[in-house]
Length: 333
Image (tube, rainbow, N blue to C red):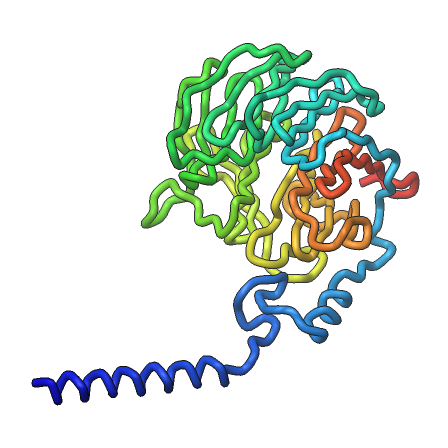
């Protein structure tokens, strides 16, 4: 019996050695072969050169210019919204900052917890996501209410509100939760399929926005789609396609954020291959708001908002600012 056990031990040991040699001799992964990154691959000079080529944008597509940059005093920004009066709301570092439309300081609220996102409804109610629940404040930052927790796995990444409902993107449970204005859950929306009602999300980039009619649009990053839901929770339409091309969405988890203009066109932001773009109501590319060279390398979390003057607001977590872009005079989509 001892000889049998000794033989087994030797066999296992030899197998481990062979596996270790195979791992050591495994060739390096090529860009695009898997793993992480814009093309799914690793790093290296060839990959960097590939990235530089993809970052190049036809100057004719750059239809916006930066008009202002508003400091917030927040080192780690996590969310951005604009109120009906064009006041700017930014959150991060357990703080809500309120700025006038010109960037002047208008208020500061200490939240006590790290906020994940912020939204402002048509009645100027401010909705702050605090990981597992939503807190309501008035336009000046005074607390109004606190809604019940979504549970231990709740992870709120985005909020959008219309006249009658509030939509909360819960990455933790992979669902879009529909509330009434009093905080009652009306429905949990999601795609049809084997895992009914749950989105397949590779990372916590799960954004929601409402259009001029109050209808919700959700980013499905695993499919590079932006999807619209009907009142009954069924999918009305989707648009988007995968790829590094300027009219597509790159990487595994893009677009990360969206905002919707009054005319139904979309503003989108991407990480990895960083860019902010304008798309028509059906998803067709109109032009580029900002490109990779406008930001520090590897930036992510470019939350978006659009004000009543159709200015495009971009959250810049690296500099702690809100950057304001406007269409160039000759470009009026």
